[in-house]
Length: 304
Image 1 (tube, one colour):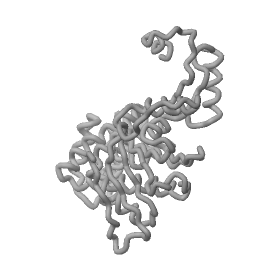
Image 2 (cartoon, rainbow, N blue to C red; image 1 turned 45 degrees about the vertical axis):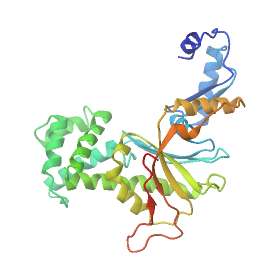
Image 3 (cartoon, rainbow, N blue to C red; image 1 turned 180 degrees about the vertical axis):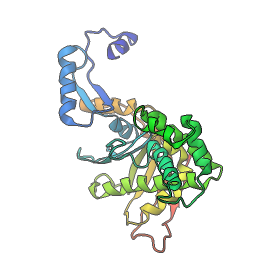
């Protein structure tokens, strides 16, 4: 890809880039990132002089901020990552569907099936009617009985296809189905808990401006109106002395990778972070947890 870019930019292939920023899925560990860098250096010695290898979450984070912050992914799976200005990091989630993925499209889809099955087994009754959700499940997986569902859960498990049920559940929730809505409310709680789990690791340097940037990535954030209240209520259970600014990047995370590459080479690359994101929501600082279930004041800043 880099050699093709050089060709399109009319740069000779034997002219190395000053730096190459790579933000790639799976690049979570420093040791394996160095292995990738060394492999590139040995196989393509003229590719670049300097490298900055990091995970795709870092690319999203640095597209929106120069000092770090938090990335909260809720797409097919879920993950939350914090990076402080000194380079220290902490994470919550990112363990896949066997060990986590709470608050993700997969988890919402899974929970819909689990609630329906438990209700029909008389194991745990659903607090809301299941008929609409069961109809959606049967239509999505093209099944007639619960036994038909087993193939999709085991022999032919397809996580992205499984997770795609979430979109139909969102539409059902929007149309007033209480069970579908409750699944998104549950997801809102899980996503807020991910943020809360990492707040003790936030450095003073990161929030000296009075706010913490949280980059929200993934398709589930398209249903923010379904997540919002339970998300806010969960955050309100603890004291947070600074604002949480939830943002969504409006440009490719490759911008963040480029910025990291430039910083690695100590090159002053012009950048305007405000052009790279839109504000989804601002959760205002609170000095004490909410009482009697009343959340603290928040500000909707969509499109501002």
